[in-house]
Image (cartoon, rainbow, N blue to C red; front, side, top):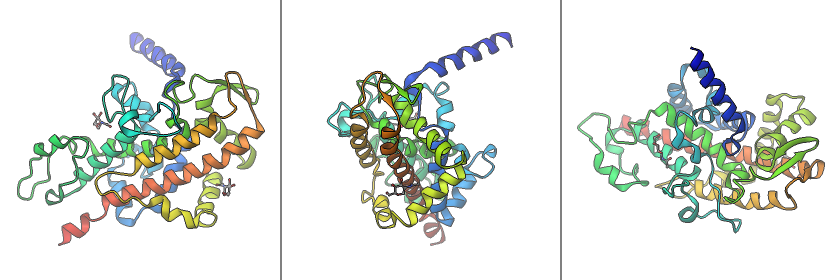
Amino acid sequence: MGLLLLLHVLLVAVVARAPATEAWGKEGHYMTCKIAENFLTEEASTAVKDLLPGWAGGDLAETCSWADTQRFRYKWSSPLHFADSEGGCKFDYARDCHNRQGETNMCVVGAINNYTAALKDSSSPCEQQSHHSFLDPSRSSLTRCTANQPTTTLLSAVDPTESLMFLAHFVGDVHQPLHCGNADDLGGNTIIVHWYRRKSNLHHVWDVNVIETAMKDFYNNDMGTMIKAIQLNITEEWSNEEKQWETCRTRTKTCADKYADESAKLACKAYEGVEQDSTLEDDYFFSALPVVQKRIAQGGVRLAAILNKIFSGNRRLQSS
Ligand SMILES: *[C@@H]1O[C@H](CO)[C@@H](O)[C@H](O)[C@H]1NC(C)=O
Ligand SMILES: *[C@@H]1O[C@H](CO)[C@@H](O)[C@H](O)[C@H]1NC(C)=O
């Protein structure tokens, strides 16, 4: 007990210090998932609810920061929260999607494809299996699919509840520009700045500070109000673009590499004029906030599109 407590205190201390382990803060992830909920088909919404853990109280958004709490339990998952690049304002999967050991696919884009495939596998009847192994073609030979039994593959052996919670989190992360920042400065984590009068770093500004300041200044510290404002923009201001956000022509993967490339471009702008010890205030805030709000909107719409694709078609197949 004493030792456990000590370990706990140490862990908390480490977590509190670890710079590279942030994601959109709780708010960013919650809002992304709340918006996604509005765009789910009935079929997908039911399938998602069936997979949620009891503690979620039937609400996907409650689980969308779960992945951040698993980085110590699942050490390998740490690099899956981002896709920093070697620069050039561009994300290049072959060049950039790897962990520090150089293992390929170990970045947020690989993870989105991974958990999309895993969920598809675990939700599909046997006959439908053909698309699940784009990360590792050798995995398809591990499919053991007999007559009417659900299939067992390496991927579908992954707990589908965890796959869902990872997926929902990572689709949020890939839309946070500084999650696709420069590898050199760990996505802005090593760039210490002042956010108004408080000490922060550029990564944290984009994860948390912009949202917090907006909540305080414009939304009465009520997340529901901020979500409604973003939602209203999706149906009015951005209604023409919204269909394009969803468009994804590849049949075998998600379009997460495209989302990472968009983020890399936005990250480039986010770095402009920022140096060690810069003070960022109103000017920076007012140019960052519209970007943050739009990325949350896009993340939500696209998460819903991915989930709709995963969980649609099953019924068609099963009833035929
Ligand atoms: C895919 O998911 C499995 C199970 O959670 C995990 O062990 C593996 O590291 C993941 N790979 C990627 C690229 O996300
Ligand atoms: C709504 O859209 C406008 C125009 O793109 C943008 O400036 C504003 O920040 C958006 N507001 C929200 C809440 O998304």
